[in-house]
Image 1: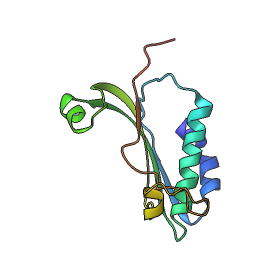
Image 2 (image 1 turned 45 degrees about the vertical axis):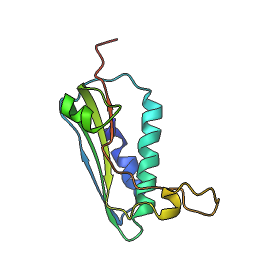
Image 3 (image 1 turned 45 degrees about the horizontal axis):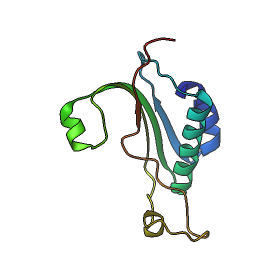
Length: 127
């Protein structure tokens, strides 16, 4: 999916940003709505673009990961097991204090930095 979106994302984010995809060659299958997943990726790419008006790098990576019990202790709510990972990183400026504080002012920026651990889904076992 990420490889298929890459040409459109390249046009969307503009020429002043470096763009890289790091697709896993043996990526596991997941059950997810492709349209919703594409929309999430596009929205995060636009947020990243807006966070880097002077240029920067947007990287989208997929991979198979295994989370162990030590990881779940450090990240409450996480489950141990095998997952498919989607990570979206940028070198943007991040969120300002108003956005971090949840300001309700319509004039305050709403776009945030697309960073962090990404998402992970359990691999699908068919169907």
